[in-house]
Length: 167
Length: 285
Image (cartoon, rainbow over all chains, first blue to last red; front, top):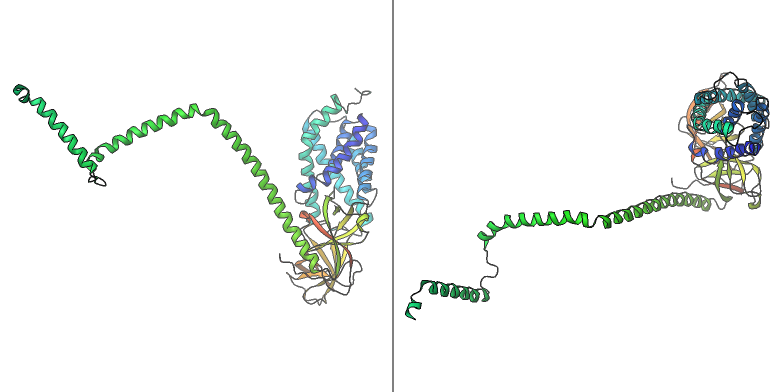
């Protein structure tokens, strides 16, 4: 049931991003719910499986988009790997930890996407619009992550996402 | 008997009776109709008004209590009706807006029926991330849509089909980094360049413009006939800024797209077109 939900949540996230949230973009930026899920998994899920989960979620997004397969898979896997190291060093009960992790994770992931895009595109226009998109997406993600973190934390400790072997 | 006749009281009664009879006869004759008996009314009117005001006020006050339940039910019913009407109004506004857009599409299709075969489609989804600019439409291979077909709307060029399923297709917008469109200026149809997207739905870039070009701000840029993908003459955008490239031999321009990509709802797929003819932009905006 736990893993079924871990599979269904990214599917739901992509669906919401492409329909509901695309109509409520802020300055053209839509939130990356999939990335939020990966970051939460990295903080609250099994640490060693976080990069794999990030990779699978990113790959799923790449396959959905049908372009530059591997871009999101690699960027989300690296983001998950780096953030999973915070697991034992932060006070995860605090909602601000979740929001801060999403803030840092979004900036990190955006940087990785831009860096990896260099392999595909001959040059990236480093203009204001790129930075504005990153800023607005980061703020949007951080804002949404507040209520989502409460649900994810409760679910992973007391609800359907709880790992019976660990706790 | 004489004693009775001497009684003043009797004469007073008789006088009153006679006066009453006289007044009745006088009144019945119609003489008093329409006559003004103002002085009496002047005296009574304020009293009447005061009494009437008090009785009406009391009547209204008491009716508040007696009709409270009925009024509450009526208010609830009217609130329900108001809610229903507001929803209906919103729905009608939505239909009105959609009808306007469809009318525009239809007019555009009719205008270009000789030059292009067009298929109308709805936008059903957008890109889930910020790095790719694409939308999904509700027409696929079963409707005859194939990869590479240009997508337009009455305002201008939108993009081209990059992926097709049986009942849907993915359209990459011209604002995407992977799309480049051969373009010319509408006014002289000579100055050529390449319009590229860079992931921003509100801006495009036109590159490789010759240094001798007369390109100016507010010029309209349209598709050129050099492109194998797009019919020529479709509006792409309006020039907002022109600058020299570092080498000085070429110019580059910023464009404001002709289409509002954030509000795309209905589009037209160009199924086939006659490359010799320029599409007509006769739709009134």
